[in-house]
Amino acid sequence: MNYMEFIWLAVAVAAAVVEAAVPALVSIWFVPGSILALAASLLGGPLWLQMALFVGATVLAILFTRPLARRLQKNGPTSTNADRVLGATAVVTEEVNNLLGQGRVSVMGNSWAARSLSPEEALSPGEEVTVIRIEGVKLIVAPAAKAKGENR
Image 1 (tube, rainbow, N blue to C red):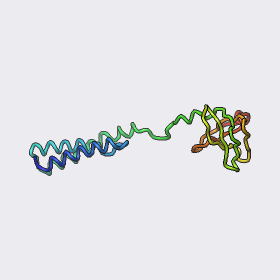
Image 2 (cartoon, rainbow, N blue to C red):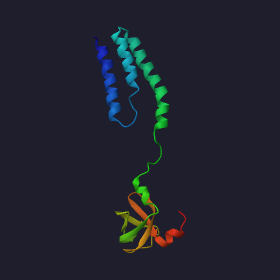
Image 3 (cartoon, helix red, strand yellow):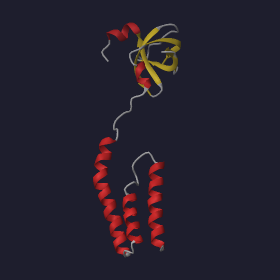
Image 4 (cartoon, rainbow, N blue to C red):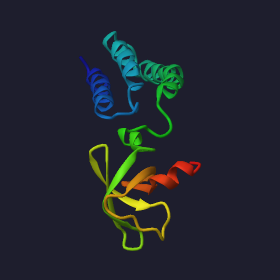
């Protein structure tokens, strides 16, 4: 065995390990190229042939698999369980006051930081509100009576 066989083996293993460690496709295309180059090295092929096989197989792997990988990737926002509170009725547990930057509501058994849809309107504890939207980790709420008549 000459040193090139070890190099091609190391490239194949390193590419596979990196691919397994990273959530995106980044190095898998080097594996078939390095395996073909390793085979050429084991059969006594010259270095130029090994390099040509490595580059050729890698390019072909990219050309054939990259479009498929792009189609399979999810693009756009990821839906979370937090979305299920949209439109739900919540109960104010701590006064919602945008001017003071405070307020909490309880919805579906969970406590959330909340702000009023109307910046000047404070909401009192015990008041029923409707969740209009989510901004970061805060719910934007409106009194239940107003929310029913509002177009979202």
